[in-house]
Length: 139
Length: 255
Image 1 (spheres, helix red, strand yellow):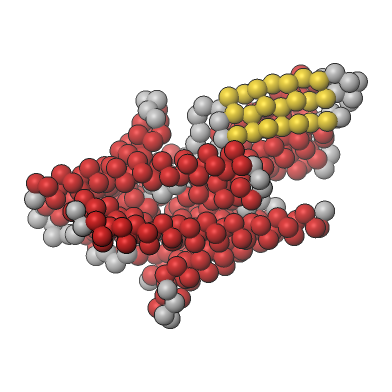
Image 2 (cartoon, rainbow over the protein chains, first blue to last red; image 1 turned 45 degrees about the vertical axis):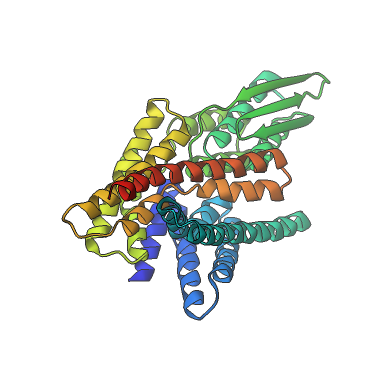
C-alpha cells in the first residue's frame, strides 16, 4: 500500500512537472525507488541522512540511465525522483517549533532539514558529475 | 546554405526561449542553440543563457555576424516541451529536418505542447498532496483534506500567474492555504490533526526543479545560473515557510 501510494504520488508529481506521457511510468518508478529506498534503509537502522543520500544516488542514477536509454533530457526522470525525498516534514516541524518559541528544538530540526537538502543536492551532483564524465569520454 | 542568417537566428532564439521558459538546464539551452545553428550552416555559434535571458551570436560563413538578446520574463515548468525541443534539435542535427521544418515544429511546440490539460495538473496536485499526507501517516479524513488543500493551492497558483502576480507570492499563498486548511480542519469537529495535511500540501510547493537544476548548472560550470537557481530555491522555500508560519503563529497565538 505504501509502495502504491509512493508510486501514485511520484506519477502525479510527474504530471505537475508536465513530464511527457511516454516517460511518466519511468519517472514514477524513479520516485518510488527513492521514497521506498529511503524508508527501507531507515528501518534497517541507517540514519536519515545516509538513507536519503543513498536513495538520491540510486534513483538519480536510474533517471540518468533512463534518459540515455530513451534519448530524453535527464531532468524528466531526476526531478520527479528527488521530489519525494525533499524533507517537507522536517521543514514543517522547524517552523512549528520556531513559531511556538521552542528555538532549540527548531534549530535542531532546521539543521537536520538543511542537511537532508544538502544530502539530496550532493547525491544529484555526484551522479550528474559521473554521467557527464562518461558522456564526455564517449564522444 | 539557403537559409539566411536572420531566419536561423530567429529559429535558434525560439528554441532557446521555449527551453528557458519551460525549465531546461542552462547547458541544455546553450548546447541546443549551438547545435541547431551549426546544423543550419552557420560557421560559429556562441550562446550565453541565464534563467532570465539569452544572448546568441551567429557567424555566417561569409564572415559577418549577428547578435540578438532575448529577455525571459515568464517562466513555468513543462518538461514535455523541453523534451520536444530536444527531439527537434536532434532530428535537425541528423539532417532529418530542414531549418524551415524545424521552425514550424518549434512554433507548434510553443503553442500547444503541454502533455496534460490544466485540469489534469490540478487533479494531480490535489491527489498528490493526499498521497504524501498518507505517506506521512495520515488517516482517511486527513487524506481528503490534503486533497482539498492541494486543489485550492494549485487553482490559486494558476490564477495568480494569470493575474500577473509574482511567483514568490504564489508560493507564499500556497503555504498560507496549506496551513489554513490544516488548522481549520483541526479546529473544526472533523477530528484531524493539522500536521499531516499541511506537510502533504506543501510537498507540492517544493522547488524540486530549482534544486535539481541549481546543482546540475553548477556541475556544468554555469555558475551564474547555478547560483541564481539556488537562491531561487531558497526564496521559494522561505516564501512557503512564511505563509505556513503566519497561519501557525495566529493559531498558536490565539489558541
